[in-house]
Image (cartoon, rainbow, N blue to C red):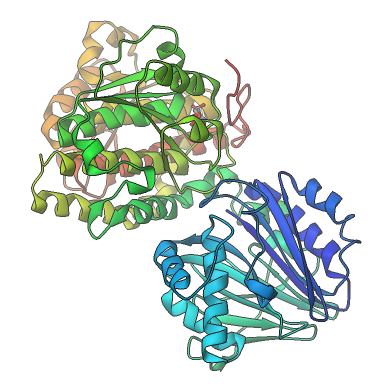
Length: 611
Ligand code: AGP
């Protein structure tokens, strides 16, 4: 996510802005910038790369005098990381200068509108559109900044936290938000704003949380709030209890738990980017119906959790779109001289977009003349730049080494690919497509519900903190879910675990089952429920301690399992999006119970950029 800061008061603004942006660095970014005004003169300085670049360009803020300014660290969503795409963005003549955190879903439509009114654009960002939309209404209605911002709020769809300065209004900052966070604090030295608590915690603990669609006007001496009608409203100040470290984690103990809780939004933002008028629309990845309907085979190549997404994708795409899918570990694919048929596509899944094996696999596919699609979470990453087609996930920066929200966003991406391909090949009816879209749209709220039951998982896993082995068993998509559950447990609690196709146990592994061995049976697929139950009975008769993970309604499993976790019912294809949540929480709580470093597990890196 981007970071926003603002200050207006008795002191020089630039050093305060740089300090605030430094406190937001943990959020992940690829460029930064600030705008400071002295009277009518507004100076904008931007820099690609680390914040130090911006500090150098502004002599740590000394070279940009003025006591009113806004600053920004950018996590690219629209338009690659570059100085031109960095914020702040300005309208002609600097009448309106602004920074933004969020995703404006209808920015293309708004851009067209503004182009038709003579506006020109210098960047690829949705933010420049938002700033110029405010400028448009400011000039059209000759009103106040509040009027202009409110007119723009009515037109914008998506999420935003905007901080704006108006040339005609010196020593004032205006802020508005919807779905993206924004807080404001006041001291005798002036007024501060930030997209998150750490940005202003050094100055004050007394803050206002800006409500959705509210507008704030900050001056050196006070802050005033307005509603969408432009009426002034009163707001209650809150006191922040967090220390600086917990503030970076949004009050959670670890980034992993914060990111687990961000999954509903990651899934929603990724769905919003590609669901248009009830259909999966991959035009942003330059994959249209013509291309999709001619694909006769898909190769999904990835590492780790991204590979597990590929395993889910195989089952979903083959069944929904009737296209054969092969899934490969990138480290194997790149050395096995794969035989890739024509009329196929190689899909590389990678959160970081920098994984060496996955990048090598992408380059091998291109060398073999096969079109490539990258599903990545980082705009402008190496894999994104090299792929023929790019489908971004909108999980935002993921800090914890163990992936959660990016994995969930990748699941949505493969679901959408399956849906778009099935529609292009006309292998699903309009009614079935509508049913599947409805089920996808229900997932964010359903994920929220699963997370709400996290304490029950904590109680259960605390009993297994000293476990030596655990087995995840399942059939079909449930087996693919088990792969991710097993990795989550291994990589952060260091407990050995294996995911096994339930039907495969009797071919050897069942000999490992002893009295009290923990076995997690994953049973989200109704068609395979009884088969997996039989496998669970087999291991129970050998002394296993059974946990079942299944959908609401399968209460009969309580006769077999010692502990049952229920998830809401959804389309079988999309069950991984719900079933993975308890498994992520199990890994988290086991790591916690064992006193381990949840966010930075031993021997692991967030992005494996070496072979
Ligand atoms: C998953 O929790 C791990 N962090 C790891 O397996 C990761 O998924 C893998 O290294 C792939 O990374 P990527 O998605 O950035 O390519």
